[in-house]
Image 1 (tube, rainbow, N blue to C red):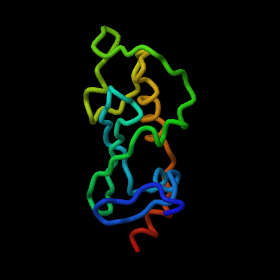
Image 2: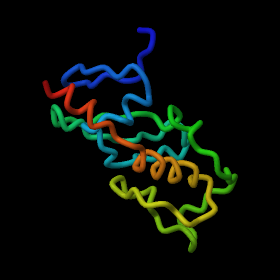
Image 3: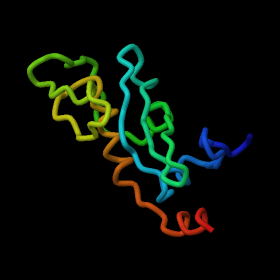
Image 4: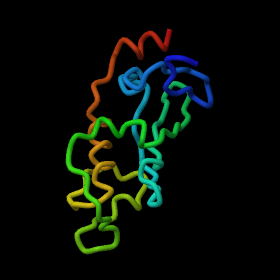
Length: 125
């Protein structure tokens, strides 16, 4: 389908673009499931409040939103690592200069994305 970003696996609501998905007031970021083999395949978890289901979206679909530094070394398990990536519901930014930092940055960008009140009202009619 041209112009397709994500479809809810429960209620089949489609979002034609990433922006429409992120702007939807019925979508809430609730977690991140890391994939240490390929960070771009980690999953951002969103609750769809309309039908009470959780959707997963690969981190790679948001990677272009990150404009900060990308580090080459992973700090997981080291003293400067707070272990956020190991706790799925943890959405806080990470202070470590770590390979995983770009994902933690994306979580902040997504959390702060402006929501459209109109999208919620149209969807609930």
